[in-house]
Length: 603
Image (cartoon, rainbow, N blue to C red; front, side, top):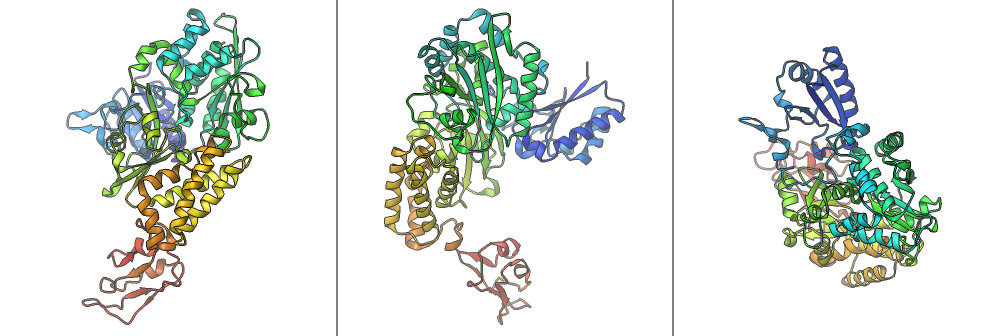
């Protein structure tokens, strides 16, 4: 028994800020102080508060150390672990109270969360199957194989109301039922979509890094329910930590007899293999994903037939994403009534969101369906930095839309978001403040879609390109009002005629910004101005000579040598004021950043 456990985040976010070196140094200092039999270091998955990484929590005290540096480790070991004196300067300040340390679950970031899919992330060592088993891991699989029929399993999932967390929100139990009933007997497959290509999305990656066994267990349950013996996890190669932990988990599960032949002596055989994707966004679409697993170029196939009837290798296939699977074991153990007691009438359970953009608490959160957008951003996310005002939130990535201030109190669920022209998507939530240009945002997402189109169908391949060209024309001040009308018509044409979900949803960012921020489009076209001051071709920089002290700091930063001295000396100043040659100015903004006197104006 150890008297202290030190949990250090080993997810991608904290790893990128040096947590691997911190773990190495921590273990070395523990050994050097003779504490190796008293203190255990546990490398976990993501805690959620990515903005504060690297993160370290010491139990039993629950001391939450944030932004830990390698040079801080000797002090933490000698003071806290050896002498029992908490290093207060390194604590996450919200946990510090007059009466000691506040529990992490009582902080603003955590107290309104409800963790089901993320329940083990930041809690267990994802590379140790015993720790997963110690948190009821594989009990759901055992219950299914020894106490339930396949029909019982499907009914439980149907009754729970679980809908797919990958974007479309199709009822999970219904999908399983179709795969079981449409084709009786023969080879069937269970597949996991861990491709997750949305910009700013890292929900699935974090589950795989922090709790890989939950996906293996859920896929085995799905295999039993539909009569499949083989599963595939399709994960993008850009997720090296997730891949490594999946490989470890699969090996451990096979060694424990939890994958392979005759699991739990039930006569049920099921195994899982990995397939690595090359980062094609279109492979998030189910038929393109299956085509890629088969070894072909990832292009979508016409539907029907749907995968439940004819999917991977032409056989019935169930495909769900990582987060969907992460809910399955809890539903089996706790029951459908427990799960459907959380959320809204038509959207049960919780949803994981990756918070990014203009928000203080960048990170990963899991909230009950029906939580308002305002609650997620203001309370859990800590609000907008620098006193700026909320302008919009993008949900659903390139397939989604922008939610404006007028819908700030919308209850987040599948149907509410679709009703206002957005969508849940996989769970990326990008926050924008008053300095964001909504035309530029639409252009950004559409550029991504143009690059990621597989090119198989003309409406997507050509239509999105033409749509992007119209947006580009508008952001350069060359657009007309007729271009706005033409762009809107083109959006609906692409949606109605594209082969797969990529093209069908690609116009959503344009349509939602046109709906809620049409005035910004008109300003770009009629006034030839970008109200947010983002679109460079519509900007001009000038120096207010009476404010300029002539220090020359702006000129030193100018990469185009566009700033020169004038003959004018402002009252009370000693040096000549400067001016900007607009013909030379490249509108980079470096001058504004350096001017401490507010003398440079961007219009």
